[in-house]
Image (cartoon, rainbow, N blue to C red; front, side, top):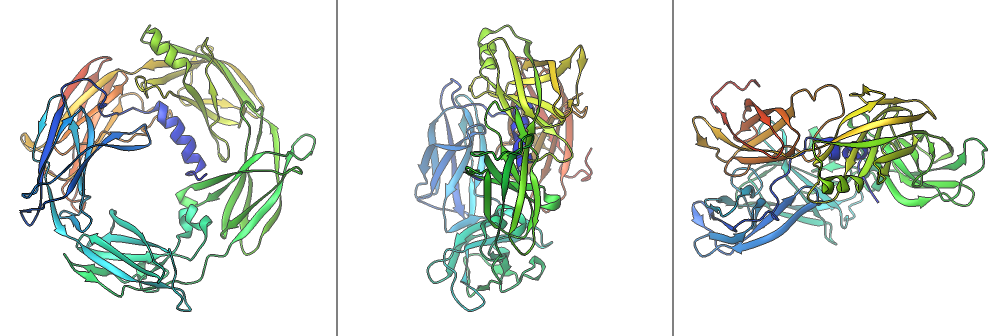
Length: 549
């Protein structure tokens, strides 16, 4: 199983439950159905036979779900009916076409009860094509090689939404179509700096025609409906691979520990780290071995079993030009933290029952925060909890419940011990047994519904918007952030933020028409109360100076 950086995973788990939660209105909300309609055109002429899909945005379900679809008629018009309330992405399926405004052919629409939403239109152009052949230095074709295409603008900045991925066929030939007009970089091979790419092996990233550095890549010009041929790539040498092996032992007795799960972490300098597990365990002698490692800096980490009191510091090593052997991972008794969960702001028994079914996480931060830095535990019926096998460092707590009704609305707002509030986390030393913690949880039930306009009430046109919310007083150094991201502004300039704690929020909104122009900003403070929907309008002056307020 592959995961992102272990530190990032640890942060995500905590952010998921301590963040300022923003959730679009669920399609399960009751209310009369709505409809969405629009037109798809190329040079103002309707395009028939294009499939239009509505993807329900469910940020906590791990993806988007296609709930409704339609097809354009002979005039390019579509209409999708019986749409329940919710937040949707309108996506069109027209592979040979590209968006006319250098954005993805999709739009977000926040659907209310019984709404008739019109003019969700898409202007397309006939897409361009890039095709070529990928070979090694001996002229042999590379089969199934992944191709990376990046759209750049006049300032040579990369547009990630212009990135496509394809693979070569049995002749080493690739063909990418439906591209927007513009300048492109085309590459094959793995980037050693992307963590998993370096671990997977293969050939080093090479840009058309044979450049190892992105600055030396030859740009490929694509025009509307054109085909750029012979965009060939000759890859350089393959990425060398080595192995790392060693033993996991009991730190007190020196005895080997069999059946212990482990993984490998790759350090990427300023980019952080990434890690990988495969379900591997140490053998009967406590031995482990991990292969397929490119030159770089790594660590082997230990995965303690559930409810374990033991932990181990990762064994760091560097791969240069040969296998690494003789690594030792020593276990030791970890610190522990125990206490009780207290619910504030509601006496609802259903909410309390949901709380006792939640998972509690302890995120440990220290100078070498690697390996297992975010263990979890269950909450007992009386609200008590206990963590074992903790690293020394600063511990912050968070919880997560999968019940839909309470999803992300139960949040830890305060950590106390003996009447002292720990806003920046609890310091724990090696093997220390910390007791008497009191984690205060609040049920967040406030809502902000807003609309973004340009100028004096002008509806927001197509462009790029960012919305951020910060509760005044939360910037005290505590670990509070937003896993799900900010509210999405839909095609009509509307947004919704639900599951908010009571308090005063600062709302920041920004806008740019095409990502190449400066951003314009505005901000506003809003008071949020539990169970109350607060409606606001944010007006951005598109002609104001680009400085942030």
